[in-house]
Length: 397
Image (cartoon, rainbow, N blue to C red; front, top):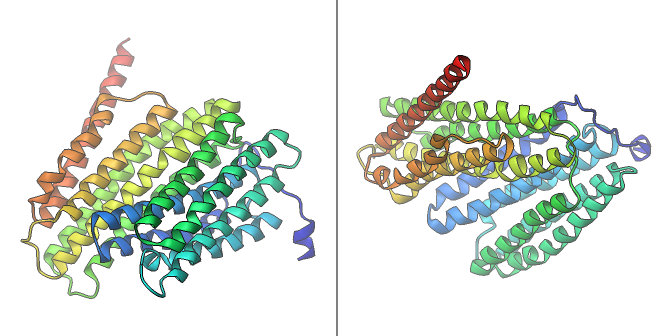
């Protein structure tokens, strides 16, 4: 313990890469994503989807601030490792009470306050560790102080929302998370968050996208439950795997180009790309993936109970195709803010996915999965064709 208290932060180098401890830290967010999907699937409705979105944003901010911290100093050493471990416990408690965090009536205050206060603990630890790890960097100290002001302000509506519950909770938590997320963006624009290792930063964000994509596969098992595995379920599971693979490939190609662009930048320009293209634009990628997982779980649950000929409801269709649209919109934003280049197809794809919602609404669940798979394969094929066309034109020139 004395050795931990006397330890000094180890500033990361340009070549720093994610550590095993950071990947271990992500496990509590795997649990968090599962809990959000479970919560939304138990009582699917527009209100529940909105509540799930707010919890996803809260989890995203919790993950995000520690990814920035790990880029500034080694997160697996000394005081920072000890503090981050405590923060893991707070995130775990946050995720644990998610299904009860929106309940109203007598005896429901404790889960709401547990979630709010656990999040406050996560943020207090991060701000303290970030300020300590800044060492003699006056600009970073200023950035942390600016962010601390907006973060502390956001705790007021967060706690009040937990106390009041109901509609007030939705409105107040929306305000709290908007202030918290916006405060980080303002601090970045005014003072800047340094991105010391672009490779580490890009890889951390890629890893969390892969974690979210894994939720689509987990949702297959959650939807089926303990029912007997039959042919339609096997086919739906394979279609889900195909959807997940397509979403990964769409992100992978974008992430490679964006990572190279981030490495080419330096100073404040690199910091702004990190804050905008990664911190902001990656949230739609994560949220969209979780909504797709919810749609998959709804479809598989219907198949498991031999409802394969029933048409999809608006919730499952909106989750499947709306989640895909959100994912593709996040990818388009990611590319436009990083490589500053966007093909017409990448801009049109989110709109096309949205237009499939009413079509998917009138299809059986299996057919809706098939339609989404075909759409994503067509999109991948189109983008591969345009890349080859661009390469041929460049070679001829």
